[in-house]
Length: 230
Length: 301
Image 1 (cartoon, one colour):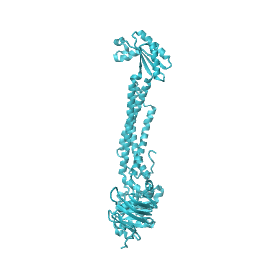
Image 2 (cartoon, helix red, strand yellow):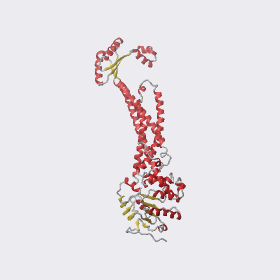
Image 3 (cartoon, helix red, strand yellow):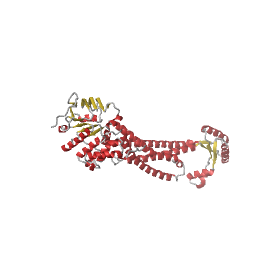
Image 4 (cartoon, chains in turn cyan, red):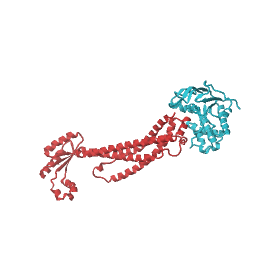
């Protein structure tokens, strides 16, 4: 699914933010990415969701080398990836319904064909009655659910979430994690960056990557299983 | 397509309000000035051409023989001889009454009855229009004819004294043309700045669209459409104001029937060009916006 081999990332002439990152993500698996603030989690996720190319190394996604891939081919790959941002990044002048429908519209799905999935998704996240609300009128948790619905509506093969529970209370965090878990059971590979050790312990069979100072804590790049549930 | 078709659901990806702020007003002013400069340029160019055509083939022979009877005989003989030449289209002896009437406008006497004017020894004038052809050869042939029929007469090609005027008018037409080009470039610069500002304002939306798989073309079409529409409003407004001004000038110009002013007009081709300019401007704005947007989007991964 995803292969990083000796990947390094630097912005401009500064020192590398990420160094010698190597790992493989298996299809249908669930991964947590942890590490202290500034360890490079967001930068690593950016490479995963194709917002950033590495400065060195090899990144293969869905079996193709993304480092040398021409720019015009990237949109096709991005449509296979769902992204949930810590700050939601909903489009403020669009309703919850239109924000969720966005990936399908961009992919050229007709209005007839997208109304069903969007309605189902609104129901799934419990916001059917707030479908026409603008993001500014939604609570933080509601916005986060809309952002997650937008990320998953096109049934992505890879879901990447950056601190998805950072802005919600513990109950809502657990509900959101339940959404990810449900999606994972449907076959989507999920990568969640989080500080929350309690969250990590809630998912059975999830694997963990830990970043420290721009390097995977395990120098071999092998993935670790999470600690046992408390 | 000048204004790209974008599905209505996609149009909502940009806010309803106009993207370009004061751009339509700036474009309206530039369009109005462009059309007025273009109209002036076309009118001046046509005037210069008309004057050039009129004077290129005309000469006046001035017979200054002292004896008025001999002078009149020479004028008459020259007119007949010239009219018989194959290289002459028309030859006309200017009547003394016509000369007196013309000079009377300066001397003050009506109908040439001023005593001072009547006492002046006026030359006899013969206007000769050549047929089209090689002017220098025709002029040499006429000189030979004048030497035979009216020795001592002066030949005055009109191009000698009206030529500088025609050249001045032509220069002004070029200046007007240069102004048109400069204003079109200024309009394009305004569109470029508008497109860049729109991208800056909506960068978060663009980044999001990119990340969910939108192509540069999809994003560019959204902005191109909105900028083209905003620009089209400005162009329509500028065109309407310019059209009103031009029609007012044309209405007043229609009363001018004398002198060089009467030679200035736009003609059917001129009006067609003026009508085409706003459409070309909309196309240029859309194309400029598209290229600016695509170039800017390429800088984002």
